[in-house]
Image 1 (cartoon, rainbow, N blue to C red):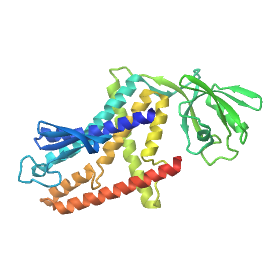
Image 2: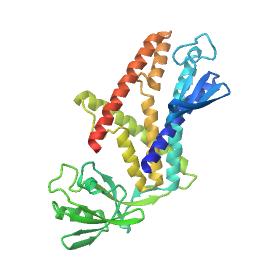
Image 3: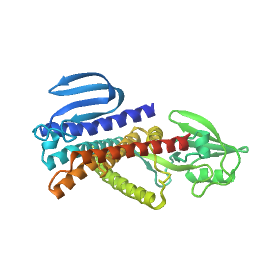
Image 4: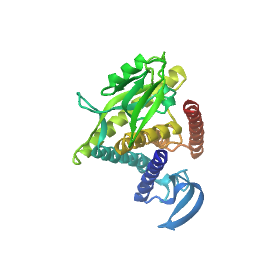
Amino acid sequence: MSIIAVIIFISLLILAHEWGHFFAARAFRVRVDEFGFGFPPRLFSRVRGGVRYSFNLLPFGGFVKIFGEHGEGEDSHASFASRPAWQRFVILAAGVGLNVFAAWILFSTAAAIGLPQIAEGDAPVPVSVIGVLPGSPAEQAGIKLGDKILEIHGREVTLRIEKEEDVSGFIDAYRGEEITLVVARQDNVMEILATPRATAPAGEGPLGVALGRIVIEKVPWYRAPLTGFESLVQSTIAIVLGLASLARELVTTGHAPGTVSGPIGILLFGRDSGALGIAYFLQFIGVLSVNLAVLNFLPIPALDGGRALFIAIEKIRGKKIAGRIEDTAHMVGFVALILLMIAVTWRDIVRFW
């Protein structure tokens, strides 16, 4: 169900992005030929106010067709191609803007509901799993993000867990031996058998988990929008810096860092994030929305940012770039993005399966 929820929310984020283009175009009285819910093949459609609203077979996001977006109809006032550069830029940026707005709403809602935070002091708070490394003994044993570790058994010794050090100390003492962890997962208490590694890779630990005592902290409703905005700014900065680091890594080493994930990794992480509660899940979707906004406005052909780049070049040159050249650039960019998506998805398959 968590994976289905992630798919639904990602589809809504894509749909919101397209709504941004749609509303901006309509506000400038640029003709919109079609707004599609999902992707073709088309199931049925209705025409309202001169716009065809289509409902399509593949229920993932949507699309908008704007008259003149490929340079046609420059002599028509209803064409995107005939509009001043600033209006075309606003129409292109509106999708990104709506994703940013959606992220702010999601972050604010999560803050009002209450987000998981690391407990301070010696308050009696259960020790929770806040990270599980792929391929680790913990993952192989079935330990999940959000599991609360209540007890650990090993060689007729039982330890009731009160702090993170209890877990790490016990696991260190039983490297290479099977132990039993008693965990609470949502409303169920279960026993999980695991064998910590005798020798673990650097920085991973014998079991391959990150631990923390989690408490829920709520923000008063009147402060939630400000907290949501702070989260929005922090997420945007983190994503921009992360993309810069990724680009530097690709240029210097020719390889993407192991932390980079594609669609499969996103679905699995979204599934696991739901174990920490609805607020954490909403925050995760908010981060995805910021990702969608930032990635879409990169100056890469086929993306909104690439189209905005051509508008900027047009303003510098004082005349438009030939439509044939721009269309070719966007086609090459589109093919490159598809190939990149296939490569990242294949890496996810190898990594997680």
